[in-house]
Image 1: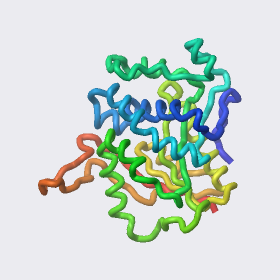
Image 2: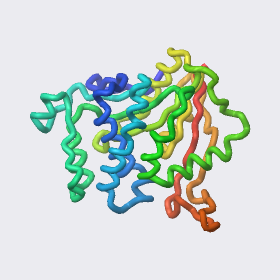
Image 3: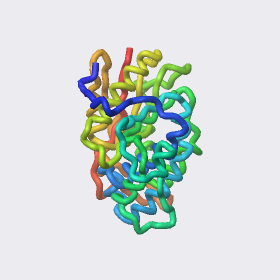
Length: 265
């Protein structure tokens, strides 16, 4: 079904709570240093922002891992850099007080076999805003994106699920910076579509902050069908602040932001 063939050294399997800290690290590192949106919108104090996002994402990532629907790609042949990491099966070696380290050093400190994540949960169980608020606090413009999508979400095209097992919500796509370009995101997306269909889900919904992610989810393998249900141009997106002034929260960065819906059956 998928046209992506991973090397046998890589394995896709559900994330477990034991992988929580690793997943948070990949999520935060990818968003702060690699995202074409966030790295340019927030170009300063990136290491401090990384630490902050890593901590802020705890409940969001944990909630999705606990759902049993989140996936990770693991390197079966990973060679540990630190003996203590090997004894634990993987470890992070961050010093949260040291903001002088750069993105490459932070990556080296992520001494685990996990290389990519795709987080998800059952949309019927509404995500408590307390889980999301800490993340939007570190990436404040993201709240404007979701608000803009909400303003365009009144035509009933994407009905809210009425029972568990209907709609899978994807929220959190990230790959280690030293593993980008291997097709991990696409392979895991296709695998998740297949798994969700086998579980009886009828649809997957995902908000995309990257052109490559939009392209993969809007063009799924047969028999699935994808479409861009909502779209926001960051450069045009504007809002009125508390003082009545019009502001453009994403400028000067221009990025296509989308909500993609994949029909599974």
